[in-house]
Length: 154
Image (cartoon, rainbow, N blue to C red; front, side, top):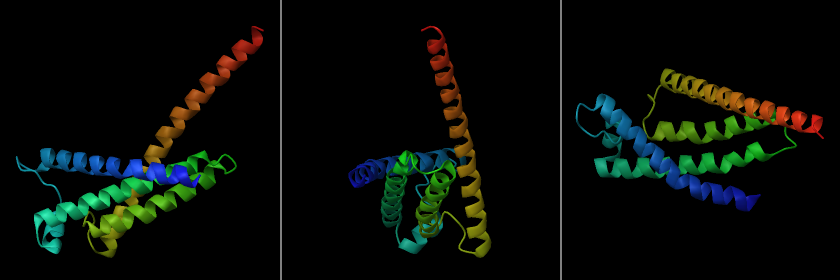
C-alpha cells in the first residue's frame, strides 16, 4: 500500500503541474486580454518577481497533484464505507488544497475569502463526487444486468 501511495504521488506531481498550467492558460485566454497570466499579481508582489512566483506556484501545483494522486488509494479501501472514504478523502484534499490556495493567493487573505474559497471547493468536490457516483452506479447496474442475463442463459 505504501508503495502505491508513493507511486501515485510521484505520478500526481507532474500531473498537478500540467493542470495548474492549463488553468493558468484558460484564465489568461478568458481574462488576460492577450497577455499570459501565470499567477495572481499578489503572489508576484509577495515573491518579489514573476519568475519566483511562477516557480513557487508550479512547485505547489505539483505538491497538490501529489496529494491528490496519493489520496486516490483511499477509494480502494474496500473495508471502508463510502461515507468514510469520502470524508477522509475530502479531509486530505482540504488539508492540501486550502494551505496551497492561501500561499499562492488564489483566495483573499481574509476570513470571508477563506470561507468563500472553502465553500467553492466544497461545491466543486460535491459536484465531482456526484458525477463519479452516477457514472459508477450506471456501470454497476449494467454489469449486474449482464450477470443476470448470463445467469438466465446458463
